[in-house]
Amino acid sequence: MKIFQYSRFTTILLVAAFAFSLSNCAVRVGTSSSRTSFKSKQLPPGQAKKLNGDKSAKRYAPGQNKK
Image 1 (cartoon, rainbow, N blue to C red):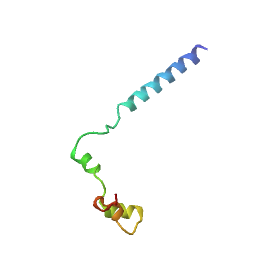
Image 2: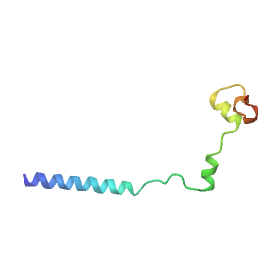
Image 3: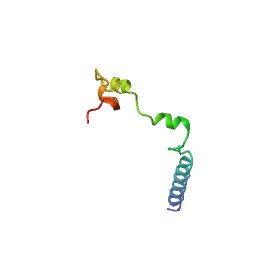
Image 4: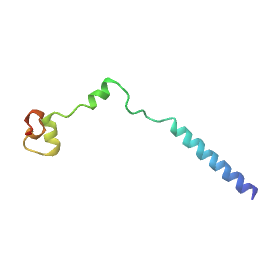
């Protein structure tokens, strides 16, 4: 019984150490750099048209929307 408790404690300790080591490898989201601001821009109307498979880009151009 003593060996079982010791191995269980060791297993829990190893799992905790592994989880802690993975938490140190976190990737930061929302950093302010020129690349991030580039990614947050809207797609041009022609590119949005291509992605959605439409024939006209009029729906995606801000000046062409009907109000």
